[in-house]
Image (cartoon, rainbow, N blue to C red; front, side, top):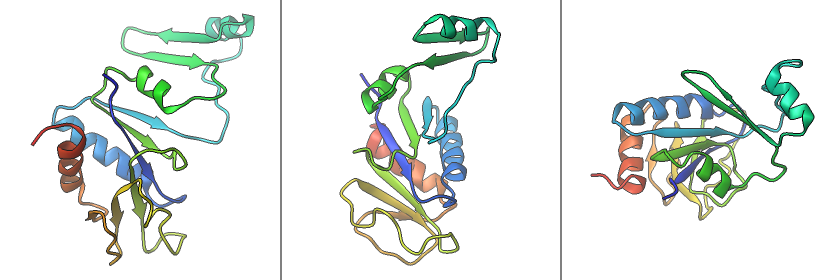
Length: 165
């Protein structure tokens, strides 16, 4: 069974990473296995030029796993990664929190701060919005949580996506 994915969305510098880290910590303390995916527009290269795994990729390997006694890192050529692939890569997780992916059809928790660089939320009336995390008095038709109300948000996620009371 593929784990559910929730997108933590918001504009740049809204506090998405801080929120995701706190939510991962809380859900992990409750015993859940949480996977995370971070979307970036920047190219990444985890291999170091000249190292064996780099040489494997240069020779034409489309996927390389870097394996230690404690960790596995995958470097995979994939010009069009999609939601189902992310779910299959993290299939042993209970839940996946995806930072970004605001254009994907995923349930979204939007982070919106009054003192942030933007004057309005992105998804206030969008059907994918499941919750708003904010320090404003906005009252959308979805549950609203404070920026530091991680326990309540974790309970919301737990009840809705992890099938636990």
